[in-house]
Length: 307
Length: 254
Image (tube, rainbow over all chains, first blue to last red; front, side, top):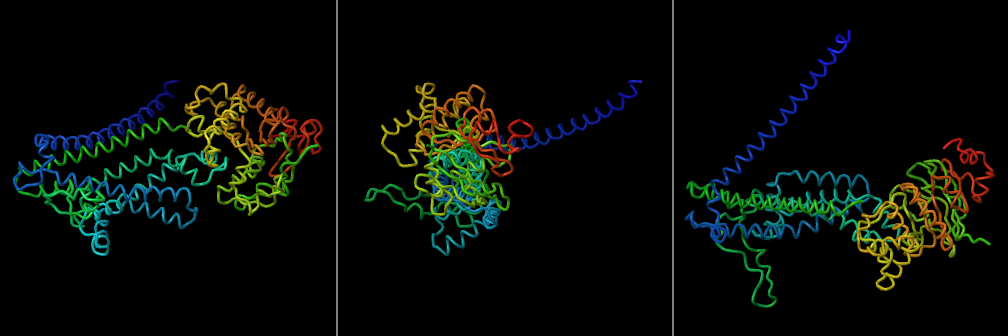
């Protein structure tokens, strides 16, 4: 009697658990597939490239002899461009994000702007390159320079910085704002003493992640006319004459790591492919390092900020 | 002889199209404690937040009527007064303790900092005094530089009281300051309020009728956005004039 009632019930449970199990398995397989592919790629890169990594590789200019070629001009170029990008994108992005979250009236106009910013983040990067070629290179006459490249990548990552700034500002509970206003603080004081410091962890994380995206960008830089063979360094920022600081380097031509890598890959000699792999490792490590720093900062701020 | 410190005159308040307060008029007496009681959603917190223009932070708020602040005879809801001035004169403690994630000292000194006070000795003096007034000094005097968020809920709420007191406000607004606290912390804060009202005018929202009966000199009963009855606490609790007040006090509803 009891079994008659129990059996359909048990069968039903067994069936549904089976579906559970199948889904778990499918999920795990997909994950493993993705991870293994990535692992294979990284391993292949490492096996080919690691033996080529040496101090000389970092200190030499590119050359037509693969064993003498290095990435000096590429990593210096990448560094200079990242600096320019940070300097123009961080203040603009953070200020815009704070304005949208704290000052802008909540109406359809603001919503339209917000929607467009989110959309901008998804636009193919080469479009930014075309726009930069038209505006920065031709209209403003900035040339095919580090400045143009920095501004282009700055525009590219600006939406990401705005969006992450807004998200971290929004994460601050209103009770904190009210507490600040309640003792007579002004809007700017509330932002300066509370909103900015409490959101800086999130903002910094966003900044670093956007930089790690910018450092691997190739297409927009090729569009604006990055060189593929650069056997010189940008002008030194420090000079022997007054005022001892020079911004001439902003006007210099450049190459960056991914372009150098692309250039070597497109050559027929296999020795150059080794160089490309080694450059890939350097690029990968830089991105990993940046992401690691971002995770660390987020962790530290989570510990400190309790509401 | 009791002085009126603030007088609410025909105050109506709207959230967008929705009217939340309906023509409320009541006095707030100097150095007395006035309690606002009533069931949830009756508008008592809304009324309290009118006193320091907290509603101005949110776009859809709209006031009608006046709150006249004495001395000076100024309408704190008027267009000619800056909400910042109102908040500098009238301090507020919120329902949920909301210390800044900064040190204890920085929390209390914040009101002085935003006013541009630079003199260190003065700030230190005030911080000590406010912490003493808030009954927190003995517990924190050795760790003024530790983080405020590491304190217990009761301590955090007393810290918020100290933060509000540091700028010597003319009126102190308390929005259910003990609703998130345990009975011991509550007793502590009630004691504190009884002590504070000797020097400062207090307006407090409370959900707890016994708390109003214990601590308030005057009580206002609100229901559905209206002020039903205002009077001496003893009178409200023993011989209310309105049957709605009586029904609420005696626990027939609410």
